[in-house]
Length: 129
Ligand code: THU
Image (tube, rainbow, N blue to C red; front, side, top):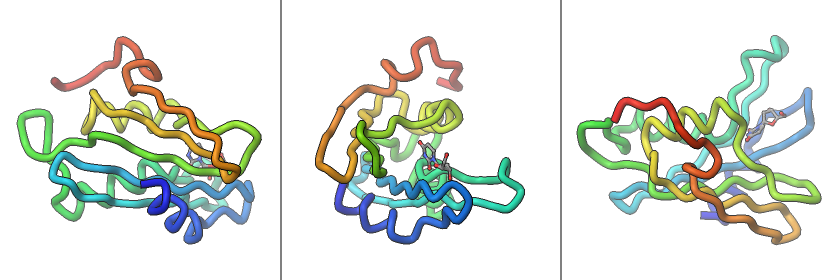
């Protein structure tokens, strides 16, 4: 998953922040879907790597809903930095929709890793389940 996230990070479009991020999801069907951050000159329209991966997976029929179908078991997020990056609040909420029990593996380019649960990152989440 980290390898897939690193590969996706190479396709990041981050000319404004220069902060390139890659993410890769593992679904309960055993599929890995990756995404990268995609920025915009209208900065607020930027899409994070995690949400790119989730929206890509859902659009391809690889994720279900709260009533059934494949869920996100884990997500890996990779970026450069002294400490591994954790998903932003918006991405935590979107992850909760498709993988409320998922594990979040955060890694930097030096190989430092931190593994957390989404429940730790987003306690008392608002969800459809
Ligand atoms: N970003 C991500 O892709 N994922 C995160 O979890 C945090 C932030 C992106 C958004 C923006 O393109 C850049 O990193 C700087 O915030």
